[in-house]
Structure formats: structure tokens, C-alpha cells
Image 1: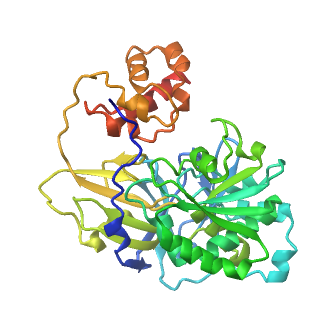
Image 2: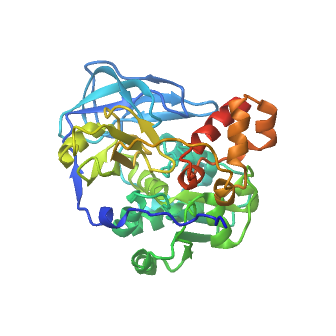
Image 3: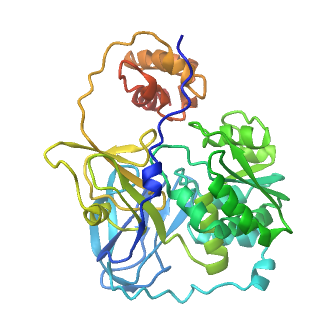
Length: 431
């Protein structure tokens, strides 16, 4: 009998043991003018102008919001070039030549505790909006929009599950900076009016539980607890995590706030802490290079750093005669890219480099492994067949829009059919 697949190899043990190199020495930083969520954008600086850390250098425009761009180093604006950004697309990038003096803009001044205690809900929304904060778990959804909700919020959840294989950015953050996460959670509770905060982690991460609980001893005046959820994939999906963390089952497509819940990735909460306390935008991310086709290494590097530089610092590619497969992000939900002149953005966490293996796609054997394993209970093979004949009505009836592109259907398929790609194509066709 076919069983539901939930547990997949996570490949994290060796990566957690890597030392983290703090890399600040990139000669040039590249800032995408547009992004997947913001198809329009413009800069507000000119060639030859000197900028400082935290200075606004442009604005990206989405369908219903704007997002400021900030310099992450000090230096000279030297022009524009095309580079690959997080979505895998080639976009125009503003280039800043790093003067390596790391001078902060005059606006970067820490707030006192008295100033923070006097902040209103609207103040928090404005601070987060002006810092250009987005969901750092990968969604890149503007954080201030969540905070603007008029719904009554009972609990704010810090999502530290990070269930996708080979990703360790949130794990490292929780181990190294638990207090930043807690203070960001407290600010978010104050902004939303929530009385309760939860930090969700995997059951197996006892070391993180101990680290966070030790830091929580400084904040006993707040109702914040660690809650342990399953070790399986995709436990980090917010609806699955919320169901197991607090017992509320939220229908797919519904706003979490309607159920009194707000959910933020732990890295997003650290960015809220930095914005509120230090008046800082996101300057750095932890970035891991892994896979059998490259020397593995972890870095903490500035937004705008070229990933090709990090590959070189890590020791370069292995087996250079073998073609490589490059995956930006995790192996289940990441994006395949064909070049390595990729720019680190707010949501960049990992590049996986694999030696290419030729896989032959075989006919579907109707085993239903994809159906049993689908976390949103759709039927991938039927959706694939509907897409192949371009039947939009069938795609809608089969609820292709519910697909969260977790990659499990492709992972479990014994015929090596890339079902997840058919789900993506089907969603586009059914619109």
C-alpha cells in the first residue's frame, strides 16, 4: 500500500557544523530595481553620488504597495547592470562601489526605551513600512500590511520551524540571536495588541528550546512560550504550523487575522527589532552554499552581494567537468537558475549546487503517491493531464490554485515526473 510521505532527508546536520564567515568585503553591491512582487521600480540617486548605510536609494512598486530600497554599504553609485535576483529573473540592478568605510546615514540613531514605549500602532506600521521590511521566510510579503489589520489579534506566532531541507538560516539565528527574536516578537505584540506570543520550533530542536527559554527569563512580564511542533515536511507551512501550535484550523485562502492570529518568520521578527530599536533596514542575511557540486560554506553577507563571490570564497565548484544544477533556495520549493551572477536579496538563504544526473521521466503508473502525500489534498496527476490538454475549466474544478508548490508530489513520484512544475503551469493557465 502507498503511504503518505512526510519525512524527507533534511541534509542539515553537516551544514549546522560549518563556521560562519562574516563577509563585508564585496567591492560592488547590486540592488535589483524590481522584484517578483514589485514589477516596477525607480532609483532616486544618480551616478557619482555617494551614499551611506541605511540611505534610501530607490523605490519598488507592487500592485498595492511601495517598498523603499536601502544601501547596505557606504560608497559611490557607479551605474546599472543586469543580474539574476531571487525569483531567478534577470533584472536591472543599481551598483554601489563599496568604500569599505561602512558609514551610517544620519537617520540611523537608536531609539531609547522611553521612545519605544511611547510608540502607537500607527508608529510601528510606519517604522516597518519605511524600513522596507518583508517576510524573510521566503514570501517577501510586506510586513507592514500584516500589522495594519483592524482585526482583534490574540496571539502572535514566531515561525522557527524551517522545515525545508538544507536551509539553516533560521536555525542559526535562533541559536545566535534569540533575544533579538523575542524583542521583535514583543514589539509585534504591542503593535497588534496581542496578549500572547508563541515561538514555534521543531520537537527535535531541544538546543533551541533551551536557548530561547534562557533568554525568556529576562521577559517574564510577557506571556511568551516556546511550542514544539512536528519534525516533518511541510510543517513550516503556516496553516499546518498554526493547527499544531495552537489547535486552530484555518481554511486555505482565509486571512489569519480573522482568527485572531498573526504569523511571522523568526528572521522577520529580528528585522522588526532592528527597525524599531536601531532604525535599520535589513542589511545582512545568513547564506549557505551546499550540495555535492560545490565546496560547502556558510556566510553572513550584505544584501546586494554577488553569490558568485561567495562561491569563490567557499572554494569554488567541485568536479568542474560535470554540468551543474543550481537551485536558489531549498530543494523542494527553490528556483532553478542557469547562471551564478545572482544577487543576495532580503529572502536569499541558500544556493544548492548539484552535479547533474540525467533522470528519465517515465509514464505515470497511477500509484497515487502524489495524492496521498499532498498536504492540500489535490490530485496532481489529474491536474497534469488537464494542463496538457489546456482544459482551464478542469484545472479550476480540480482546485489547482490550492497548490502551495511544496514539491512533495515530484519528490515521491516513482516515475520521476516533475509534477510540481505542472502545478505551477496549471495555476498560470487557470487564472
